[in-house]
Length: 160
Image (tube, helix red, strand yellow):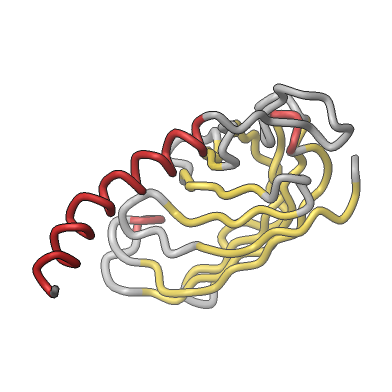
């Protein structure tokens, strides 16, 4: 009996996975207004002002540090809904303020599955992986560059 169950599960498990993938692949998208065939996320999902704050240990070579160093930043992202935007940020490294209310351009991508990227468009600027709430009210980011420590949740606080 045990052999029969093992053989059934060896055949059934892959079939269930394939069937599950077929079902997921055939799901129709709809936007917040119920319009069919609209992916749940796009560049337009991110529009407005999002507050953020992060702290952690910066590792070399990020921000020119040569040893593990404490860092913190706070500011907001202004997303334009078209892949462009602006960050206004204050950054402290090892207790010293190295940027204060700096205005820097950003670019971002958003995939239909609500993942994406955010890049600060200054020489040596950091890049982040991004996870977007389907309604656009929040994003989670994680640093993608060696040594950059940042990860956090940003909340939309204004549509502009």
